[in-house]
Image 1: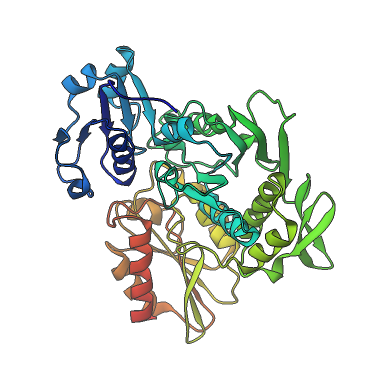
Image 2: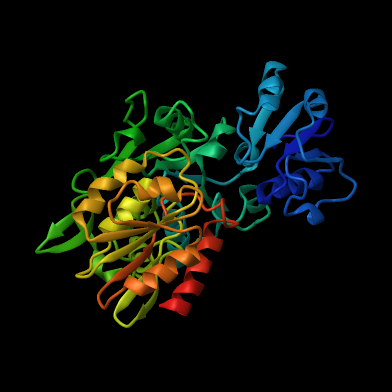
Length: 438
């Protein structure tokens, strides 16, 4: 454990992560200086009143007087004030780095463009069935630093985003995994997918065992050193999905483990998530009986290909968590219907290449309903598309067009922040509207 007494510490970003950093230092008797570019950050009222706080901009004078800067994930290292701090050789880290320095128990760390929250939650459920107390959080749910307060846990299971990995330098893990890498957050990474991938790959730097996706070379360690790697795949590797007599099975080391249809979750992408969770659980020696029982009973996370309504033989699916193109493609591939798919796309596309959706749209009977900031851009990827300002306006249009056997799918391929607080807010609004107009 490191003492921060006597250090001039600045915390930038006063959201949930920033608040966890404040409390971490405050418990040690350290009073950091705080700043946020927002004039009224969400958790301002929860911040101790005796801490200096600058709002509305980043105070460069404070920054250059500091010895340690702790940034929230939403603050990019490319910010001019942080570039100036780096030139002045001031240390800049994030909450995951702070957590890694303090953690006294083994860590499982999971990242990826899609599926990381689901796999983290699956592992938490497996641990619960195995009777093993764990601290679960990070980018999902409880901030990582708050997990340190849980004294009885034997293991940490954390989800880590690329934004968090930017400011993480020594994350010692028992197992690390990159589930997949697809084009996402290209507005944050102007150099493209290789820049994004480089930050994801940092999760392997101090890992004892790496779980890699054999179907996705972008998840492989860049030095091609695979001696500490375990692979999972659709149809090869130690962990794979095998088709036996027209049924799909999770297979480990050539041993049949679980029939996919016996799980509550649906969709091939979820079977791959379960396969990843099985592999990690095996690596850390969770009992196989607990693994199988947990995966059978895992019902999925909200806003992830979630069936929210079936009325008049029309199915309404909330996949608001699909904030990138690849995730929406996966949702479409998992949507099987004799009728039409009414696909809701909308929000901030984050400079993504939207045209990659075109091929799958041509293969299925899909009509697009586009809303939000990039509605016009989204409408150009398909000949059968309508543009609206809001989600509600789009759903009113859908109501006029749906027939028995159709599916209404909210899988926006975009960030929600142009019109909603977050993807959960967008998903909850969709559920309300589905029940109102469905």
